[in-house]
Image (cartoon, rainbow, N blue to C red; front, side, top):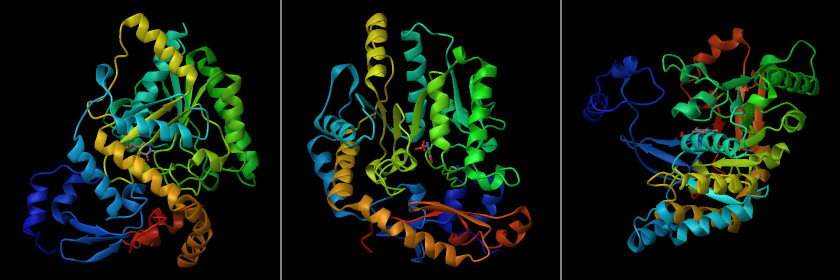
Length: 410
Ligand SMILES: Cc1ncc(COP(=O)(O)O)c(C=O)c1O
């Protein structure tokens, strides 16, 4: 094994990296990325890579977009920071909230800003708890997510996440977080079970879980339209329609986690539009600013806002907020990013190019057992016996869950 470069040694001796075996990482060291343009990132040796996963499914407008850079610089010169606490406000946050309400796929009353997808989903949890305290239903607090879901890593968001790697030895999930079946037809359907039959069974399983726990104890259901980090899992036909009917029967508040699927990743502005369901609240992050700066948002309906009014009046203040929530520079960049999605018809282009992207991806791995794809999200599922042959390919981007930036400058 070649010795680590000076930069790699400095990294290993100073950083803790997410999602890596920290012990073997000490031998291999990092891949240091130095610069980027369009769809390309360049490492510290000048080698170019196509950033097929758009960072972490977030750099939807590509790298080096001068309009976004200029917007950030201009806003930084004008007002580099202002918070939204205790009644203060600023133009970029107001404009971004207005814009999000305008493009929302369901009626949205208000927008609460935070900095990451995890913070957004943590906030969603706190808000549904707050809601039911306001409604005089303090026992109705459990939240249902799904096996293989990814909703983030903060303590409560990680409890929503349905992946063992995010729970083991972190003493998670917290009590009151339940996980219903994963909608992965290829992996979990019974022999001969059609997609529709599988979807019906999953809806029945969700209902059985709610009934077992007691509907009077369950407040919300949260889902990604297409599961991302759990393995790009496109739900079976009729899944969300059936799941939504169960949620409606038991008065569950439905949250769409659009942290990956929002802003065109599936070829629609929001993923729930593509999957045909209507949530009451929405979490967005990542492509909201095309990842030029951290920003996330929780979009809530009037019913929730009214509950916040009641509770904050009773308690004296709404006791939740992040120092950098709605940061003016991030908000200005997000307003510009949404303008670019609309002006340059990025969403339509992503939808138009998706079939070509998926066809080429299919052609690139002929032996793949089954392709899962929606818009510009795609992955391949292989049977356990194929794992060994696939493992050798995993060091290349082609065997990983992959997405393409819908627009690039390169
Ligand atoms: C669907 C979804 N929700 C939430 C998150 C958490 O976002 P963050 O890493 O910004 O906290 C992610 C991150 O990948 C995600 O994919």
